[in-house]
Amino acid sequence: MHRRVITFSRNVFLPLTTVCANRCGYCCFRTPVEEGCIMSPDEVIRTLDTGASLGCTEALFTFGERPGAVPGFAAELARLGYADILDYVYDLSLAAIKRGLLPHTNAGILTYEELDRLREVNASMGLMLETTADIPAHRNSPGKDPAVRIEMIENAGRLSIPFTTGILIGIGETEEDREESLQVIRDLHRRYGHIQEVIVQNFCPKQGTPMEDAPAPGTDEIRTTISLAREILPADVAVQIPPNLADAAQLIEYGVDDLGGVSPLTIDYVNPERPWPQIEELRRVAGDAELRERLCIYPQYIEKGWYSPLLEPLIRQLAERIAGSKRGEGA
Ligand SMILES: O=c1nc2n(C[C@H](O)[C@H](O)[C@H](O)CO)c3cc(O)ccc3cc-2c(=O)[nH]1
Ligand SMILES: C[C@H]1O[C@@H](n2cnc3c(N)ncnc32)[C@H](O)[C@@H]1O
Ligand code: SF4
Image (cartoon, rainbow, N blue to C red):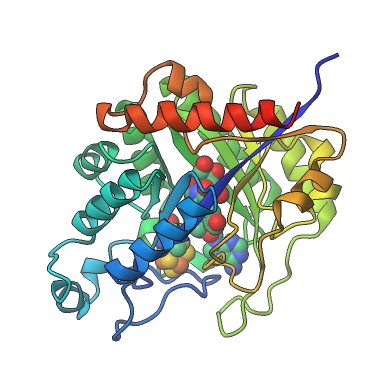
């Protein structure tokens, strides 16, 4: 009999800047421009080096959207010798590759040209659709307009970029909205074949944000949504849940395929109050299923050659390494 497989990726989280042109009602990550709103190259390099020594394979660059549009940010970035945060992430992606980590960037909305440029140094990229609904939490976030998000996910498809997206549940959308959001993702994948995973992320209220008193979705609601995702999405698209935000052991059997990026080093800067479980804990969560490490580019996209030539040697080397550690376990 075929044993079920649950995957995860070993990463470091690099929040290059907390400055953001949006103001989402649920977010505690964003800060005003001030000294220290940008992660310094030294700190990034140190994190990459330590991450590499701990066996991490993914450098997750997740940060505020279009920070350059916020007054004062450009001057802060200029102190580091950069005019555009995307040039900064490009250079640091090269630094990650040099140290043996595959970059995965989620910087919010990017244009077709920007995606094309970052594609060169990213093994995969991501953008949460969040929801197709028009909700109060996104009133001050032009970048969360569903049409804008869908257009970017579509552009990533046109560029054959292995892509991570997902929905955020409990932010004021209805169950019908969740269904519609998942159908939109399915349709994008039917057209371009680039969606490797869909995150079903549960909203966690944050003190000091407009939604601090909004209720968090309960386990039953998350379960129903996972089942819905598994039902709507084709089999080659993984359903991912974040094991630090939800009780993963109680959810696995409803159709979870993946536990996302887990870090032995860095915290989840978007949910700083929620520590990552250790790898041993994930094994318990997976239960009867086989827990298997993966890269931030899924195997089917490696096979198809959906990556830039610059990444080829590292992808090859890391794919062999994680396959080897599995053999070493006698699995
Ligand atoms: O593509 C994304 N990946 C996100 N990831 C990455 C994801 O968990 C994995 O790294 C992917 O599975 C890449 O393979 C996060 C990881 C964290 O530690 C915390 C938050 C996120 C959020 C996103 C996200 O919004 N989009
Ligand atoms: C990086 C991703 O984190 C998610 N995100 C942002 N704020 C929260 C929160 N309070 N709870 C859960 N997820 C959140 C969004 O979906 C964003 O796209
Ligand atoms: S969730 Fe992302 S886009 Fe929204 S305010 Fe926070 S950092 Fe900005």
